[in-house]
Length: 506
Picture (spheres, rainbow, N blue to C red):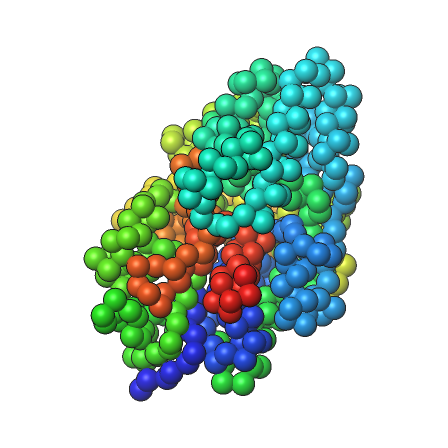
C-alpha cells in the first residue's frame, strides 16, 4: 500500500508539527508520521492513573504579542485558543545556592541592580558582564534579519555591525566569567539556569547563553491550558486539513533514495508513503542512517557533532499538600549544593555521582490554575537533573533489575534532598511517583544517546549557518533541535523559517 502527499514530515516534534500545520493551512496535502503514540516530541504529555505530565518541557519564551510563537499561532488561527500565563516577572526563576535564594526578574537592568544590591563586592565584574550580555543581545536581535547561512564575504562586511558576535563567537560563558573576574558565588547565580542548556559555564557557548537569557528576560510563559492542549491545537490543524493526516505509531524505518532524491519512506508497520517533498524532524544523523549515509556527502560537516547529555527526571503527583507553603509558585527553582557549577556537572556526568545533584524543580499546577493535570486537591511537582546516557543504557541492557534498583536509589536520594531542604515529610504526600533516565528518552522519544537538546550547545555547534537546511538529497529538508535550536521556541521558529522557505514567503 502506498499513500501519496504533497509534503511528508517524518516526526511530530514541535518543529515538524509547526511546518506541517503551516503547510496544511496553506492548502498543501501533508502527512506527518510519528513513531510515538503522542505528538509533540519532548513537549508531549503522558497520562498515568489520571495524572498528566509533560515529558520534558516546563516553561517557554517568545510567546508575547509579535514574538515568534505568537506569530505562528496567529498564522494558524490559534492565538485566541492557545493563551499563555506569564511566570512571575519579579522572579520567574529562583536560584538557590547552598540555601541562599536569588530571584531572577524580568528586565536585565533590574537583574543587574538586584545583583549589585546583594553583592556590592562584585560591582565591577557585574557591570562588565551585563555590558557584554546586552551588546550581544542587541546584535543577535539584528541577526534575525540576516540570512541563516552567511558567506565569508557577508561576515566580513558585517564585522563592524556584529563586532561583538564576531569577537565572542568561540567564547564560552566560563571565558566571560574569567575575563571579568566574576566571583564564584555570583557566577553560580548568573549560570543558575544552565540546566536549560545542560552544560556548565566552562563548556556552553556564550552566544547560546545570551540568547537564552535575553529571550527569557522578555517573558517566561506556560500554556494556560497546559502543554497537552497547546500541542493538540497545532496537531489539529493537520488532522482537520483536507487531504492531510497525522499518523501516530508510524515509525519510519527506511528513507528510499533514487537518483539523488527521496522517492518514498517505509514504516515498521509495513506501509509506504510518497510525496513531492520530504521534511525530517528526526535527528539529522539518524535521518542520514535511515536513508544511507553515502547520500549525504555534502552534509558531512553538518552531521559532525556530539549530542547533549540527558536527564534523570522524577514526576510526582502530590495530595494533601500546598507547595506554595514551601516556597514554590509561579516560578521554577534551580537548586545547587554549592557554587562550583563546573564541578557539579563533572560529578554527575564524568564521575556518575548523583549523591548531591543540582535539581530543577517545576510546579505546573502553580503555573496555571486551569484544571486538567490532576484531580482536585492534588498538585504536580517535576524534578530533573543531568546524567550520563551511556552509563544508564549499559546498565539497562546488562541487568534490568540492577537498572531499576539504581533508578530507585537515585530517586530516593533526590527525595531526601527535597525533604531536607524544601518540603519536610514530602514522601507522606506522594500519590504517584515516576522516574525516567536518558535510556527512557532514547526508548520513548527516539532521542539518540538520550539527548535532551540535540547537538551539544558548545561554541563549535553554535554559530552562523545553524538552522533548517536542504540536504544533499534535493527534496529532503532537515528541521529539529539540531537543524535549528532547542527549546519549543527554537524548534517552532525553525519550523516557521522552513515553511517560509518552502512556500517562497521568506
